[in-house]
Amino acid sequence: MKRYLIVKMSSMGDVIHTLPALTDAQKALGDIQFDWVVEPGFAEIPYWHHAVNKVIEAPLRHFRKAPWETYQQGQWHTFIQKLRYTTYDGVIDAQGLVKSALVTKFAKGPRYGLDKQSVREGFASLIYDKKINVPKGQHAVERVRQLFAKALQYSIADYPVDYGIDKSKLIPYTRGDNTIIFLHGTTWSTKHWPEQYWCRLAQLFSAKGFQILLPWGSESEQLRAERIRDFCQEKSIALLPEVLPKLKLGEITSLIAKAKGIIAVDTGLGHIAAAMAVPTISLYGPTDPGLTGAYGPKQYHLKVDAPCAPCFGRDCKKGNDFAVMPPCFETLPPEKVFHTLIESMADPELHINGLTIKNNHVNKEKVI
Image 1 (cartoon, rainbow, N blue to C red):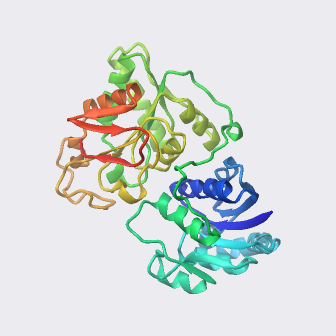
Image 2 (image 1 turned 90 degrees about the vertical axis):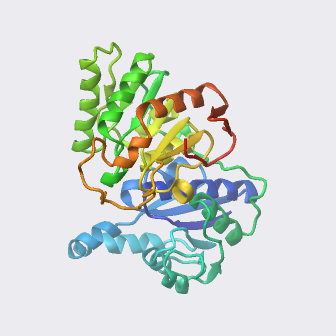
Image 3 (image 1 turned 45 degrees about the vertical axis):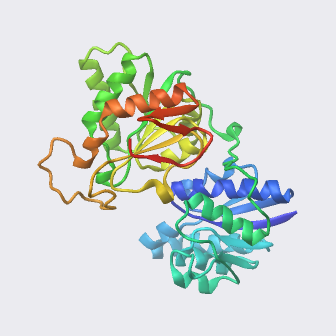
């Protein structure tokens, strides 16, 4: 059996984007297994794929924050020992950063990575034994698939995107079969869809008999979820949105897999929705979904229609004197988002403004 080591440590979306390449390799080569180096916060994800044998947790963030403590506790030494325990048929850097390339140096086996023209950080390519050209300008999922295919010498021409997640490995968790999940939490302030829009959207879906589920991962997200629920209560909506308890990643993934539909901002959990092929409307303001957006069947990207977008800014430079912040999201009001998801759930083809968007294609991007 061939055995390879993958280095793809973060972020959540990047880790999810790597899974289809493993499915390709199994289909093409059959008897193959992977070990995976990943940040502890995302260590659960690789185990969802049946081609993964072992996960090696990389304490790099902890090491950067507290290097002496990490060294004293032996975490770094243990990490290196795990890397060097097995001699691999190949070590694939699927991240393309200097830090990930350096990790490959400690592993045993020929090192594969992107060449200088393809890699994110050019110096990283100097560390690889075998440098592979994968043209830029493609979605991250396709670039990783091509990297693996060229490294392991097989064709992906006839393979559809398949994340290969074994749902039996998820933590069982359910809230019924008529649920809509709002993935409202994200990092940049400019990625946040306006809170008053979430409230109105919850009102629209709840009035139609859908159970809205509001997950959260931080105190600020919990407070937002509670305000959305309280808004519906003030409007006398009979079926109130449910603010979930704080869930493990496997639990929220289990809920996502069973949902009727998802509304998401540009967030890591949106990529999980894509991997589960659940009808999802992803909302993009300052970022562009073309290269790293939610990717897979039943994924729809709604982008703001503003001359400044995508600005890729973490802070809005237009100031705060607007009814909606960031103001570009005025072009994505709740009613538009509501009707788009309703249509996508009801019909295998989504018809909007004369456009036909087929669900069996991936990466639909329309300014609607």
